[in-house]
Image 1 (tube, rainbow, N blue to C red):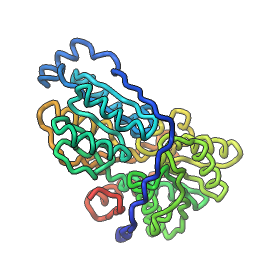
Image 2: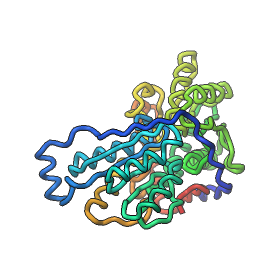
Image 3: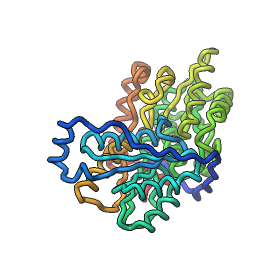
Image 4: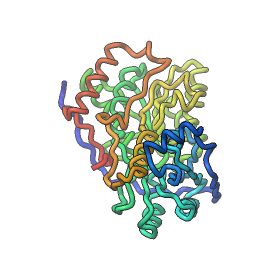
Amino acid sequence: MKKSPRTLKRSTGQLAAVLGVSALVLTACGAAPEASENSAAASSHPGAADYTGCIVSDSGGFEDRSFNQSSYEGLMKAKKELGIKTKQAESQAATDFEPNLSSMVKGGCDLTVTVGFLLADATKKLAKANPDAHFAIIDDNSIKAKNVKPIIYDTAQAAFLAGYVAAGTSETGKVATYGGMNIPTVSIFMDGFYEGVQYFNEQKGKDVKVLGWNADKQNGTFTGDFENQGKGKTNTTNFINEGADVIMPVAGPVGLGTIDAVKDANANGKDAKVVWVDSDGYNTVPSGKEVILTSVVKLMGEAVDKVVTEDLDKKWDNTPYVGTLENEGVALAPFHDFDSKVSDEMKTELDQIKADIISGKIKVESPSSPK
């Protein structure tokens, strides 16, 4: 195989402000596990009945069909398996982050999971003020504190595979990606996707174009938020009009606008497809099953479950958890309904590329990759 793609260079994009109305939703989670489950959990994990695991979402909410939802499901898995108590706070805007997190601490949470880069400032502030409480933050590695554990992902690795298969299945020779905000946890997907397309071009002697992202300049198309589905639909329609037939939105619920745009285009004679991110969109976005080629998955639920279990078992440490292809923290989802349309040759190539990324033969490097 040819040598690995070049290293990307950039300065991290500035964090845009998140706008919206302020609201606070604080509730206890669902019913406790059955007595038999609680008894088994208690015997394996002493103290579970007195332990409270908590979670605070970003403005996307726990039903975002993306990283908030996956993280929440991880806490619910821990609740069911371990017999712990849980609390949650769903943010509607950036102004909710600190009061929501404060409510968790005041509510006696042993460990509070904060979901997303945008909660870093609030997490850092509350962690400093409450050194005996434990925190885990998803998608951020900027907080250096003994009581904060980062949960981060090298999603460029899995996105590289998605870019390769997108280029290989494109019939127009153009694919596209866009983001919600130009922040590291978004651009890392776009970097990997872009490099996967370039690698396909190198291997196959092709010239598939990527719309929406310039990896060298580290800028591209962004909606400016993670809520406005209309912007997602407009961006996608524009990409399709420019000839793109595979689109990867990295924008949480905004990506639902991409689903709508692709379905509308296909109803009018196009043959476009979507690459979802964070969760397996085939399962989390039922309305998009017919157009989702695959997904770039971060196994956030598994990481949350693992961190909660370790904290309950007095095995806490603040060493970052880094999800990679090797430890299955990130992955390319199955092709589901498109499986028969992806050639056996392509599948074999993807398996080899995955192995080469794990071995280090292929270096997938983004300035936003965990260091």
